Structure formats: structure tokens, C-alpha cells
Amino acid sequence: MAEQQDSPLELELVATGVTSDGDGVAREPSGRVVFTPDLIPGERALVEIVAEKRKSATGSLLRVIEPSPHRVDPACRFLLQGCGGCQWQHIDAGEQRHLKLQIVSNALRRAGVEPPAGALTVELGPWAYRTTIRAAVVGGRAALRRRRSSEVLEIDDCLVAHPLVAELLHDGRFGAASEVVLRCGARTGERMAATLPVGALIDVPADVRRTSIHEEAAGRRWRVSAGSFFQARPDGADALARIILAAAGEPCVPGALDLYAGVGLFAGALAGAGWEVVAVESAPGAVADARVNLVGQTVQVVEADVTRWSPPKAGLVVADPSRNGLGRPGVKVVDQTGAGRLVLVSCDAISLGRDAGLLKMHGFEMTAMTMVDMFPQTVHVEVVSVFER
Image: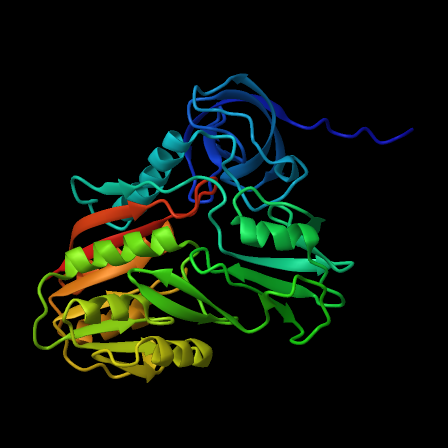
């Protein structure tokens, strides 16, 4: 007699919130939390349980019974095939920003920090904005990862990619490379295809570079090498620099520190406003870019790991760490500077919440917060926070 298989558990649930990864949050009648991708807060839906833990479960959305008024049809055909690049194309732009602010505010409150009143949001164009894409290469063609998977999906277009990059996704052939970084200068027209391994034979238009491009942002021209970080869109870089300058106030002695300085974007903006700046960056390629970009400016560029560096005294600290945030070592360095003001650029809500809690322990109070919607159609967001003591 064949063994009877248990039927998949299907439940009708109502989403009441959203996770930091962008999934809808609902509860079973028993109280167990169910996390379901593509489910918008307020929606009633039929959900199949696909993975279970003791206190939570993961659901797969089978059918929306009562849709949110903010639900829209995704525009990208590759999203429907499983591309993991854009989690939120099914949510209208206004609700995306509302949910991002909710995610950030919840992360802060969990860390014991109340979000400042009057938090602002900078809205940027929702399509054709991304100037850098890291893609896998399959059979010589660009491919992106499927959602939450190591599997890849071959693509020939991307609706959030800048047209100069989208053209390379469509027409580029990248030979035996395993990965390729496609990057453009939206305001210079330059573009690049940097392969792994370096030097792999590729078939791209004659204007495509292999090692670096230039971009214009925050009133300056920037060299950005293949391995260097730069903001994903120049209008976003403009917005971040503008917010940081407004928060910095008038130059003072001692001067400013720009931690995790990259190619020098914020150090250059501060120097242009009269600050003397020490810019600290660990990546050798970015350090080389910064020294080219900041020549003639009142900026000292230091190649060092911020967390292993003994800082001088400073009146102002600007920090733009990776997605992992400052953490305890970074917060310790900020504290050692004696600075009364920190302007922190965060690209992950959970890291921001943890860092805000750690900074609070060192006497810093969050006094202002501005969300810059750098990545529409995704759950990702940049937050500029001002801390004072």
C-alpha cells in the first residue's frame, strides 16, 4: 500500500506588515508568523506554507483575494520569470516609499531609538536609473540571479538599468567570463565592461572601456575604477551630498573626517564648502581614484581600515559604510574623534537601527533623518541620519 503524502497546508491570511526584506507579514490563527514574498500589507490572500520553523513559517502566494489599492502589474517580463533584481514592482511608487520609511522606523524603535519627527524623503525617478550592474555570464550572455537563489536567469534588458547599461545587457557578448560589471557615466556618456577574469575576450561597442569611467555629480567630475564603489545614480549622489552639506553646517576647527570615503564624493563636497577633510578608505583602487579626484583640494586621503585606524580629533564625522554598517568597531572610532556631530549614510535599515542604538550608548542623539529613494522597485533605500552629542 502506497504511503499517503500530506497535502500542502494552504491558509487564508491577512498581511499586517512587511519585513526588512520586503516580504509581507501575517499570522496564522495559532499566532505563528508567516512571511510571504509579494504580499502587500492589508491584503487578504491564499498562501501555501512552504517552509516551517518553530515560531514562524514561509509562505508562497497562491492567490490574492482582496488586493491592496497599491497593487500594480509588474512591468518587467523577467521579473515574472523569477529575476531577483526588483522585489517591489507590484507596489506603486508612493506605497514603496511609505513602506521603506516604515521599515526604517521599525528598525530604529527595536534598537530603542525614536525616529526624529519630520523625517523627509527625497523622491527620484523610478526607471532607467541604475548606472552599475554586476551580472553573471552564461554562454557569453549577461544573467542575473533568480530571487533568493544561486541560479541565474539570462536577460537581454532591464527596466531599472540606465540605457547605456541596458544596451550592453542586450548586445554585449562576454566570452568565457564568469562575471561582468557593467557601469556607465550617465552624465559623461562613458561606459565600462569589467570582466572576471580580467582580460576575458568580449564583443562590445568600441567606446566601451575596461578599467574606469568618469561621472559628474555634486558639481564635480569623478574617476571611478572598475573595483571602486560609486553611488548607483548621479542624481542620488547629488541628493546625498546636498543633505550632508546642509547637516555639516559651517566649517570649524578641528575639521572633518570622511570615513569609508570611496572615490572621495563627500570629502570633495565638504572641501568645496571650506572644510579641511581627512578621507579614509581601505580599497586601494578607490584610494587611487580619490587621490586623482581630490587633487588640489583641502583633503588628506588615507589608505586604512577605519576600524584599525587611530583617528585625529574632529569637529564633524561623515561615514558611508558598507551594508554591514559601522558596527561596534566603527562606532568606537567615531567616539574617539570627539566629534559633536556625525552624519551617517546607511544602506540597510537593520544596520542603521543597530548603529543608532550603539551611538546612543556613546551619548549621540539622532536629531534628523532623510530617506533618499535611490532604488525604486526594490526594498533597498539610503538613509542620511544626523547624530549629535
